[in-house]
Length: 252
Image 1: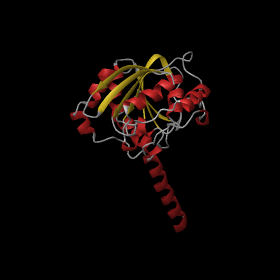
Image 2: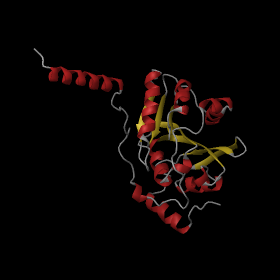
Image 3: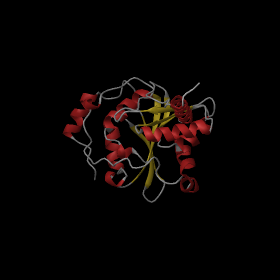
């Protein structure tokens, strides 16, 4: 005969197991081994904005403004493309990129905020989206597979990167030949959640990125597209440090 205490323990165990089933273990993590260390690169000569939310604004307002359609068209997203959303948050771009690249494509939704990735993972699971891989990155390294990405997106988040030179250098390792980095940001100071275009150009040029296009998409908003450097053309971390010590990238 089961005692009252034993019955209570069994009941509590069942409740705990039920909760575990309802909240599965995180299945995301880094998708690649670490790249160059953060200490290898100089700190930026500008303020870094705080990460404050998993999304820029409401999804309806962004859809109504045509943001995603405009950026995806400028980026040249197509069926079969392998793309990454760096700083994906809860997945506004990821969930819209997935049907555009199709079953033969792949979307990497990357972030450094575990809570945001949990929100993204839940959306992917609820939507039964099979071509999305959720990735936990580092502050200085997206931790994406080598030569895997054709188009990378940084949407309203470049100003929040504390170690931009490390992120850009390690991201280049993950880019396919002539891979493109698409940055959507605002012409504001970095502390006010924007990036002045001259500052953006300076920081990306320091790591060997080549500007392909710059499109004004709003009163303050712009989309800048850069080609990532190859292993042969990317400067070393030490040369980046030397160059920026002599001529730092300073906000206007």
